[in-house]
Image (cartoon, rainbow, N blue to C red; front, side, top):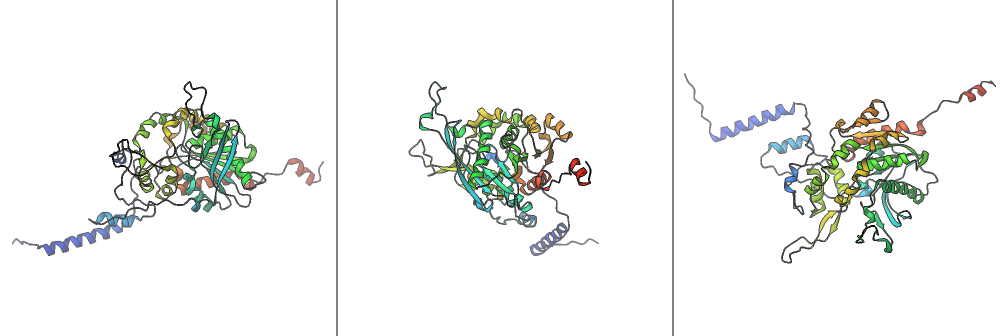
Length: 435
């Protein structure tokens, strides 16, 4: 006997509802599995921006550090659900640092006046001071999230983060009679803000530390830990190697840069620069581009660091009849103009990193970045190596908490205050009544 069942539309709807309920119940009992790592290349996200002079509004997306996996799964399974756009508004610097300073310096070597802009939270109770230097095209606020996280672990620790010349709000002004260079036959103008050779940047960093000491009336320098990302890693290494700060330097940390991979990457740098947007209609669109392209993977860090990379620039159209925005946000630093310094930044970096005095920490996003010299040095125990594979190039922004943990461990390991030396043999003999 054959039974035939027919289902009307109401029955079908009920069955679908039961199936969805059963599936949700089964899925709820499964362990959470993190998503696959995002491809760090810009192939997918650059389609909307490549060869564009400016960026228009981007599609709404849910990409926030605090979003839960449960709500994401629910939204993904509900057809037609409206996903809220992420919060893209800038975050203020004073959520992460206690002060900002403008430090004027007469640089007689270069016959210029430079006003260094820095963010600082002074150390407490003779705590150490972390001095950070950002990479090319970035700013002192790229260390904002790390500064906040490190102080959760080491409350006595201070942080000093500068804007390098040609970056952020640091401004270099030459005397009126030295705006041209006689070495150029046509007297081409020389922009001192773009004098970015390694020795100049290293000297600037030393001056910033001394000027901060004077501005905050410190009788002596606190114990220093130098931290540099990318180009900044080369700068702090050069400063440590020079010995210009004497015994004040406990050690130095370099974030995601080694000589071999850096020199290889320079070959494709111009290609990368040609594909990124030249301008943005709003700060929010710039924040969103950085996170969508995985340049910075932390929305929170992007909201505090990205605004300092841009400046509002009126843009006029060559065609009077064309309609153009009243103003746009463009890059503060023209990285293409720094090409002449690229080789200078990274040549001999690995050798200098191993040779300088003080503790050494290298944090990378992948062990494939190690070159031969550093691989041998690591096997010989010459420095501490930590790897954060889930991070991109901006490891201190993408994974600020984990980076802060590694830095805190490094600081504790090299802190003189916690180092107890054994008594001298002569003192022991005297204490026991010996001659």
